[in-house]
Image (cartoon, rainbow, N blue to C red):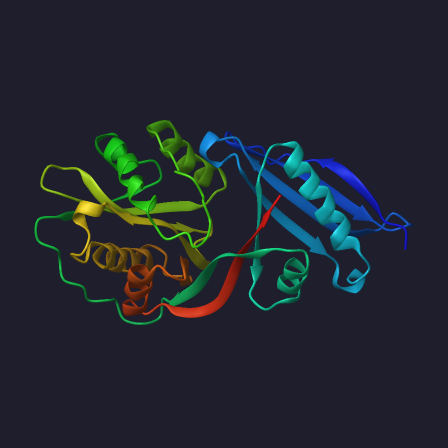
Amino acid sequence: MSIRLIPLTDPDYRPFSRRIAWLATDGSGNPVGSAFLRLNSRQRQAHLAELELTVHPAERRRGIGTQLLGAAVGAARENDARIVLADVEAESVGDSFLISHGFTVGLTLIYTRLELTGPDPEVADVPGYRLVTWEGVAPEQFVQSFTDARVGMNDAPTGELDLGEDVWDVERTRYAARVIADRGEHLSVVAAVDRSGTVVGFTEVVVPADGKGEGQHYGTAVLPAHRGQGLARWMKAAQIRQTRARYPDLSALLTDTVENNTPMRRTNAALGYQPTRRVHRRKLDV
């Protein structure tokens, strides 16, 4: 079967990354597969490229995926990326495909789900701290320390991957919140503040525009000096109660955690989150 790869212009441009895309068509011009390669422009993450590759189930085992992968790997090299990453359901057809092309497991993500039909979690307050909440862009009085608190995510387990330091500034913090708002979705933040009024931990949830379906946890972090006191569990419990009250039609909250991030997995389990699937983040050195 004759396969043609058509390079595409991808409109999904972001301030710190861009995507290259290919469409695979058969001899009649029918789409049979696609590939997207995201390239990072941040210096600390420029060695990473993120791949999404799909082949129509009826067209598999005909070399289409291999051709698309070859184009993506070639583009990664041309753009000085050293590692190609791809997320794939563990033990799936796609997982077997990546294994056959030399990909290894960089890390494994455990996806969990919390049904919002149960009782509110009961978690005691943590002495010496208070919780604050906001929607969308962080209030001026908290935006700098909220940005600084994101440092707490830089030492999160990353398996065998060198993801580089993820640097945030106030401009990026505000931009990230505006992007969610521009999509019509709702960003809710619960933060732990110490006696000085500084944000030392936070957790985020994004809810669909209509307030229905499932909400998605984004970042959760506690600064190292404030760990071991139950702040993450306290913040997440408050967020569950708040989300249920604000969005009564929401059915569940979703989150994912690196498999060897034992403290966060224990926190989620204690709050009632149940595992739903495992995803390998596979890597290929190019």
